Amino acid sequence: MMARGTVPAETMEFAHDPPGTRGRGATSRHERQRLLAELRQEIVACRLCPRLVEWRERVAAAKARRFRDEEYWGRPVPAFGSADAALLVVGLAPAAHGANRTGRMFTGDSSGDWLFRALHRYGWADRPSSVGRRDGLVLEGCFITAAVRCAPPQNKPTRAEIENCRRYLMRELALLRSLHVVVVLGRIAFAAFCEAWTGIGNSFEGREAAVFRHGAQYPLSGGVTLLSSYHPSRQNTQTGRLTRAMFHRVFSRARRLLREA
Image 1 (tube, rainbow, N blue to C red):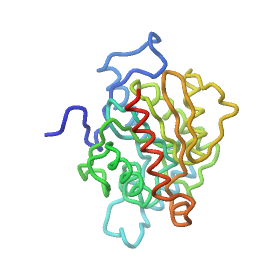
Image 2: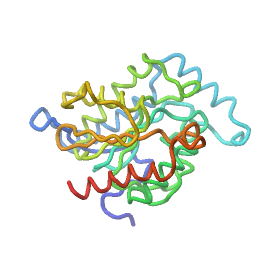
Image 3: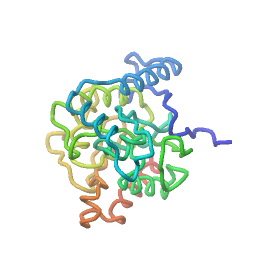
């Protein structure tokens, strides 16, 4: 039996009041749960970006040789995590043969190996690795999402594609009231989160002066803290730009901030 507050990673029904919206139309737990379930289905069915639709489906049909016997997800990938998430992790986009194959954020690729190892070490995941959306992984107090929900060619979404996906991130933020720490992975995720955060009416003092850099920390409204890290892509990890110690220090700080909250 799972401990209270834990949620299987494939479960997508969450219930939260919007951060920074107390007294502004907050809905009941049941209603928020329904809205997030509907949002998941809306994301999975999205076809707003023709280039991304064509690419994700082409990759899913062709497959990588090492995964030729697997059925690819080949659709937009929804967020997942705990209903009472105090930690939000924002990535860039699904990997072509990672989440685009498995159907779950950061699952089935090397970036996910780095992320889940860190989340496990600091108490947000019940295991240090994840291979598929039905592998039983449980997150505790953590919600994982991304700036873009479809795998983009060369991992480079266009500005219009990022803007199309922003509506989904904004709606997730508006339904996650328990957040205290946000970790963004990479420059694109940093910019996408900041736009979504202010887009739902939250304040961000010094937003104009805030710049992405590894290890940066910024205070947000409602007692939320924003931390930024290089993305754990192979481009960063295999070149030494991002080391395991550097990455873990970000999540160690996130855990410390939550203890102090």
